[in-house]
Image (tube, rainbow, N blue to C red; front, top):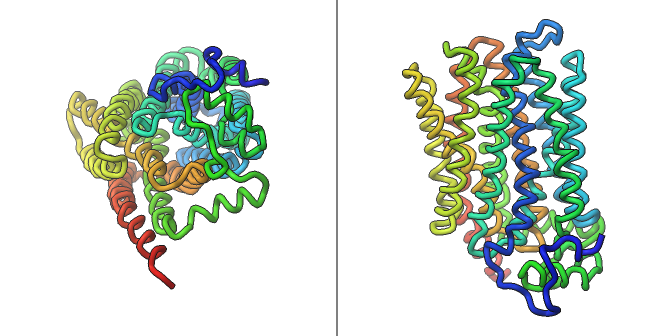
Length: 447
């Protein structure tokens, strides 16, 4: 497919439009749609879990439900690592299409599953696709975004995740009680029908990846059409196995060797919070004495808060820096989690859940935005892939931890665990600038 089919319209040769926020909108819109379905698929499980636990034909228990949630995120871990290191070989657009197709097939498998084991296999397959999609979309929008609008663009992209989460909650509240939880998972097949054709027809390939693959003219044409600076060899990810290994080694170069593990730790804590809450919030609130409808509704409320938080965090981070915003947001998330341990009136609880959503999800997304200040263009995809991939170990732990606590009747301790994760994440991301200065100083010191 030629690049003439992936742009909004022809541009005179050599005359690029201004590189403004508007110029990234076509790419942002397509990635927004893909991440919307990502958020819907991730949140479907939590939205229908109470119904699945009540289904005697499936045989799901709280402990096995937590384990299956971890299978999903383990698949995400593998998918994120593979996507970040294969994108320069296969291209970002084909990898995005493959990711969407995989999690749609996984959702179909879940709808057909007649046992927890088969259901878990479907969630693992979905996880492979979900894990690859997020870092690829982030890398795409960061590459096409104006430098001073990177955090805002990232925040706008991630509103789609929470819009998808709200859609999943709506399905859990309406479809699952009416016709059963399996039909909610059938809705997860929609991305293969809706998003894949649009991505194939309209999404441009990364100019940096095109240049790395020797397609200089196509790289230049895409850059001109979207108002980007023409990519140079130093900004392109090196191709082949040696290039992918070099990209990983670059994450531990003198200027980044201390920042990289701190970003990984912050991402671990952030994803533990995101996936622990997304999987277990309805069941934790149900165990606290709230009704089934109210318990599932909390998932919609926290995702609504997440949308507001993304917009606030993106604009605030463009002014004050992603690191500062992420650290503060982690601390506020910890405070919200501790408040949810208390027995509060229903209206107050809804307010606390919404406000916690403002901070919780965007704290993690600002970790992603912070990678743009740590890694250069050639290492950005690998850096994001590893930050999200290693962070997925937190996503694996979060659902398992919630299941273990629920199985032992200690659901309230889940909120304490989330608060601790928030404080550790705040400390890790706050130390990134200091680690970068330390690495630069050591690199500049004569041997």
